Image 1: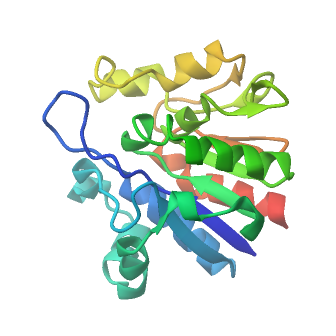
Image 2: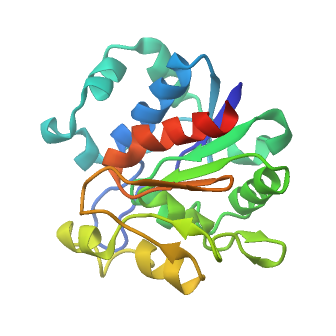
Length: 224
């Protein structure tokens, strides 16, 4: 079982002068869930190499058992430091793809032609595609049979009220909840910050950082 994880290379939080990137828990929780299930995991990003970590996700409040495991795991840190270039990966080499969130993907992966084509290749081949938190936003240009991939699908993603809570409603390029609805997705949500994951066919989407592990488990279930 081979799983591809795609991380952002974008580190600028709009015009705020602050840093962003990928969200630590949203990478480590699925990464270890896949590894512990016996999967081989490859990590890619648009620029390759070390992807930028959202500093807010690395504060003491954001730590979990799995983030602590990562801090003591030189092998996992080495994988993260040497992500492969997104342009060099092919859907044919993997069984599924998982996109962790953080705000970074809203700027680069959402518009990246390699990412869009890659998701379409996985989906057209009947392979599962998963995205959590802000990462469902990377689906907004992705098409299936000429229509938005989320059209008519039950989907989850970072809520407008969660975005308001972190005061970034006016900073992000678009709001995940609004965009999924605009594209014709049947958007659903749980209470803010609770784990909530939806599987509809081969598409798995999760609401927020707390949904990362459950999103990975839902992807594994599709592969079982």
